[in-house]
Length: 542
Image (cartoon, rainbow, N blue to C red; front, side, top):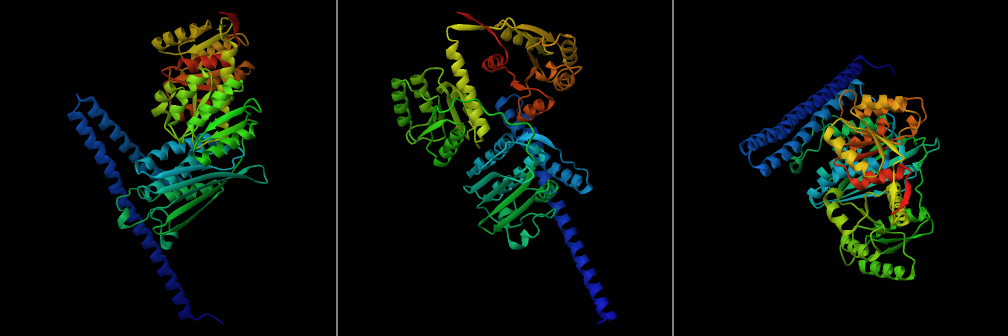
């Protein structure tokens, strides 16, 4: 039946009305966004200006000035995140955002995320569980910066919209895909304020955020989830959300990611050897035991420190000591570091004691090392970190026992020290010189490149490279050396020895082609550990 003119006119009017309503809603959303941005930008700016004034008026009080500077730093970081969200949205909408394709470590990425988000949860007395499920490949290919942005945004929102004392559970797992890649699934569930069905329909639209009396003090641009959605879509993935008001929310992200072509090296561990695991938390103990069993080791799990000391005493008497103690976060009868102290006195200085914990190592390192802890593995726990660290400890203990009463002579080895600061040169020469190693010095990256190019093949056994230097920095010098056609340019170990000590600095060093990273002030034990691993000394009787 032919449409009448009146019906056609009514349809056109309805379409125009719908378009007008949509435009008005968009304008209202943008108006709310500008209002929110005005408030949200002024809040940290007020803190920055106010704290700067307070600091200047108490310039002679070091503690007061430091407190002001720390608060300025926090406010500045928040302000930068607000600005970055706006810029990110602009780049995405204009099509100028390009996702990188680089090899990255999933273990490093998850650890970075935990470091960023956990302090926020602790501040609100929330319980944050990060569970690592079945992970078949840790080295993947993708854009780690943007992937971290996705995860931090979702977890940060969970913390933000969950009440003090609430609970957040995060899961990571992988499933193989038919094309040889993996599907990485990340989920984040909270018991926070939740969202209405009406808002769920708009959650991924720009400038929208949950509006309620309880959430009026929560800051943000309303762009975060829109950016997350666009990034997930750009990576060929999918994002979904389930939520009910006052009951919480669950976000799930699924992303296809290629596996890095280079094979992950399996740690060299003595098979069938026993490892004592002291951990009261059943889920943590079960995960540790599973990783050890897959590597061919035999875990013995105990929940109390007294049982662990008794078992080790009996094993020592029978001459059947386990190859290491893995110390967890919680025991039934004593603090974990208390057990470490007992075991160190019982088993001697070389016995490997590995602490596996969610604790901030920087805060507990002094106390832990004094108690006898040999090394630390952070949670969330990945097999590569646990087994790699354990392997290093076991081999170090074996080497020390084999060479007891002997000392290493590195006089047949030659290292290139690249350092522009004369005082730092003097310190490094003194530390390295104590081992007998031959040292050549370059004052910047350009000199280092020239010395390496003009040296015979295999002349240098190791390069210690500063990063921030005049003429040519350490990153560029490393890249130039790696590009040389001679074989030793690819195989020689280049160790970053720098004051740039953040995780991002370690990542940049690896991207430039550096093999290892030592932060200044130099840890002497770490320095000598690298020498032992890479040089071939003569061993002489002491």
